[in-house]
Every structure is written in structure tokens, then in C-alpha cells.
Image (cartoon, rainbow, N blue to C red; front, side, top):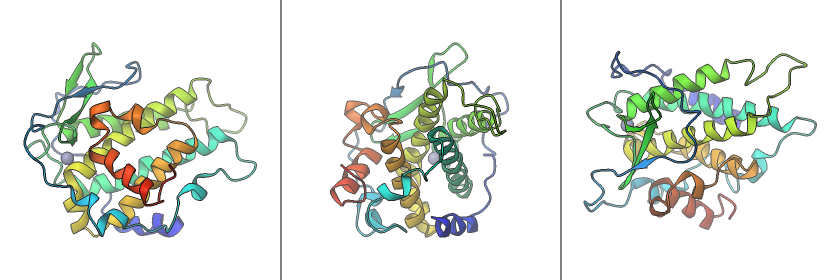
Length: 250
Ligand SMILES: [Zn+2]
């Protein structure tokens, strides 16, 4: 995958969304368990088939065949360490893509964290009430929260002799869930711009790697990431396609 990592370096460096209002508070989502969904108000209007499900884009990838082999941990590497390093890489790579899309992911274009005709991810506010946020605000919250977590030595120990906390598996699932939601929004709302940047093969590869990784380390499956009604749409549909095509294991 090193060629892949190098080649996404040509994307514009990530930047903070200029559209996030200053008065918006950043809330830590960790205490909120489970899944949070709202209805996307556009849910009832007929939708054309998303481009990411169409040929040739659906099969554009930098890795041929199954992603199973690239997710296995190297010998003698602690599993927690491997999960931590990979989550760190997924976060940084996804942040690069998002950085290239911030001009399009604005309050006006993306007033909700939509990820399909009837999927709108919600975020817990200070009193743990779930609220609908514009996508750029939601994504900024996730990225700020993640940066804080990744810098926290008690959650992601980097010094030798320090162990991962017992809660690491729980934290890893939470991180995985929120990264997944960013992928889901970018596919749903910004795939056309991803095509204009000619990075669809890179983006598909990163997401397929992310899904294969989640399966291998039992982070969260599609059924836990989506509601039953969300299963047949958005990136859930894409992952079904990739399973049919042998890109992902069934
Ligand atoms: Zn957006």
C-alpha cells in the first residue's frame, strides 16, 4: 500500500473547514453508546443510482483482488498496536481526502450529515441529546475529537512499556464508527468531486481496506454501522457489491 499512501500525498493538505461557526461547541461523543440516526428530509424523492455503484467507478481500485491479505498483522506485532497504527493511518488518509473536499462540503451544500436517501447521522450534544448538524461541523467535531484521542498517551500509548488501556477495544470501535460515517457522507455527497479529482481508485481502495480491516479485527460490521433501513443504500450497497465482486470477503 505504500504507493497508495504516497500517491494520495498529491492531494491538497487537509485544512479546517472555514464554515464551522465559532459558537458551535465540540462535544466528546464517547459516552454515547449505540447508533444514532435521523431521517434525511430528502428521503422520499426518487434518487438516481449513485455513481459509485456504476461501472467503471465501482471497481476502480489500486489493489487487485481481495483486501484480506493486507489487513493481517505482521508476525510478532501486538494486535492492539496494529489496530492503533491502522486507525491512525485511516484517520490521516481520510483527513487528506476531506481536505481536498472542504470547498464543496459546506453548510449550504451539506446542511446534514447525510449518507444516503434516508440516512442522516446525528451527534450527541452536551446533554447527550442527539442533534442533526451540518456535515462540515460534524466532520470537524469527529476530526478534533480523534486528534485529541490520538494525542492522548493514556489511550494510544507510544512509549515503550506502556500498555493499552482495557477500554481500548471499545474506543477503537467508537473511532471506527465515526470514520465510517465520514466515508459514508463523502461517498453519498461528494463522489462526483472525487471523480473530478481523479482519486476514485484511491478512495475506493482506502474504504475497501477500511472495511476489510474492520471485519478482520471485529470492530463493527455493516449491520452495526447502519440501521436495517440503511442496509440497502449508500455505502452498505457498495460493500454488498464489493462482496459480490470478490473485493471483500463475504
Ligand atoms: Zn459534505
